[in-house]
Length: 270
Image (cartoon, rainbow, N blue to C red; front, side, top):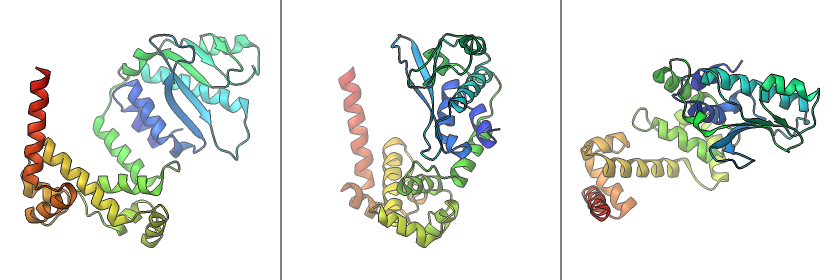
């Protein structure tokens, strides 16, 4: 029923990561549904919750839909975990059938008219490994497919373009025609929408390059020429000019300062 989303979720390492993946990409299945991990509304230690919400303004509130969605979430958690301890259920409306129907289905206490639809679970569930073997490479491929072919309506165009440029940098040219194709837009349309949000495609590319360069300079021993290639700059000299503009220092100084700061921090902790 969930199509490629099921492959992405089912190949996460833990139940919590699977829930986070579902939360991130659930709009692919239904743009009016939100799923999220949250705090226990009853505030018990070691207890968390998974909340199910219907948010689409054009869809009237249907208690049956909430019941069906929360029931499906419960069954999916059983599949993901191989069986879990459900501590309680909250529903935002009165019971639509005898309360025993709900408790028999969920196997846990059910509270009604709480204003929220959620499952109360032990927080240790989120760290529990998936019940079936997972394939990290398949997960990576499916997530890349979802990112490339679908746009989260909750995200701004800037956020979406930044994510796409991050994926492109160092693998394919971060050109507006390519990114626009990934986002199913005409390049001029993309430029216009970015301008409406107060930026430009080139400004986003420059900022992504800056962040990537800083990460590689301070977190690796990679040669400067290789870093320049990965951030799509034309050689070490171009990286030096960009670093002076971005950080007010040369690449050598950026790397040296980061190492000095790391050493000082280690000494202070000792």
